[in-house]
Amino acid sequence: MYLAGLAVYVLAIQGPSRTQFRRRQVMEDWTRALDEVLDLEVWAAWMIIPLVYLATNWLDGLNYSVPIFLGALGIALYAGALWLLWRAYSELGEHWSPKLDLMEDQEVITTGVYRFVRHPIYAGLWLWACAQLLLIHNWVEGFAFLVLYVPLYLIRVPREEAMMVQQFGDEYRRYLESTPALIPRPWRAYGTMEVEDSTPSTIEGPAEGDAEHSERVDAGED
Image (cartoon, rainbow, N blue to C red; front, side):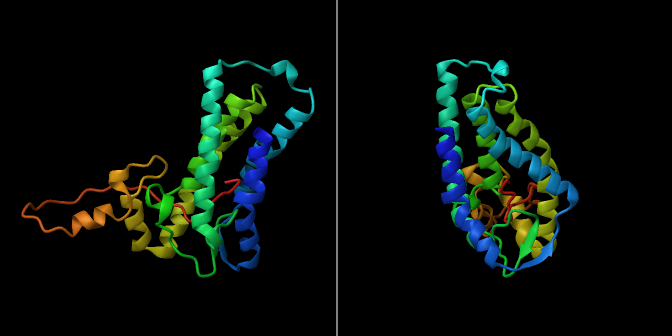
């Protein structure tokens, strides 16, 4: 099942976006050497080590077991990750990049799942990383993706958001202020705050807002 999901992601979910990326022109590249190292490490823990584990017995001495209900939870998280990634890539379309790039004719996407969270691809990868440790019962492979994904997310996302603010200014800042990063809150979907702000009121006072930031360009592997 794990391999089937991996194949669906590579070929059917990310594949079309990667094809479109090759046809687009990169206008500005923000990728550093550290970003490339983190991408490579996460890609190996996500794509390569599972294949080694499933095809060999090299890591069998580090296997563990989980209760049936945790295995079922892993399946649910895995299915949720694939669905969220499918929606995010579909809605991002030709604007996706595997690196920190500003693409030709890039736009801020605020529709579909991007209306509820700024980083649905990163959110999908969080779900996948958690599912992996429940589906692949090995202390190396089960935890490798999650452990390596944490520094990638913490280092990459702030730079990605800074890149978007520099490019789109107030348009992106409004998206930041009204849309959570990873965990959806329907009452804070993009556009909700704008509607509320435009409603006449006799009560005056300073508006309050969050300072988070959004995703347009993704890490794909992430």
